[in-house]
Length: 129
Image 1 (cartoon, rainbow, N blue to C red):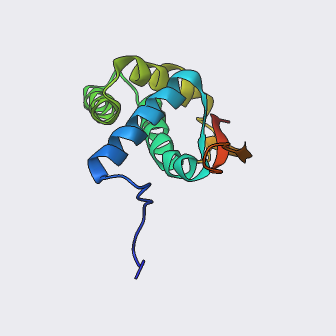
Image 2 (cartoon, rainbow, N blue to C red):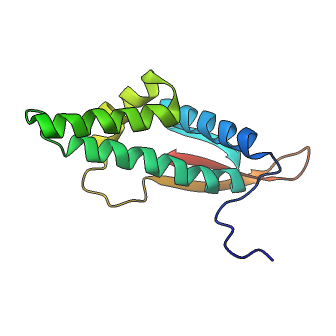
């Protein structure tokens, strides 16, 4: 039965799947638009929205207060532990998250395009709104 399966396996082992999704998250953050299959895009959406939400929480903090400065450091470390790319973390926290401060989720858009010629997989463009 397929009950309580909250993610797609994408035909890969769990470590390979997570590495692929983390790399795709970094690519999406850096270029703000990538082309992939529809199922990968739907799974990628969860990861990207989680990282952007960390950036939004960071931008809501008052960095003058020591307690909130500790929370800010913790949020950056959480994002870095997931992305493992300081350039991508900096872009999320400085450029991307401030754009979505008034938006409650839904930071990405998936646009279905066509099918891949080799295997007829449905392709989509996932981009930041």
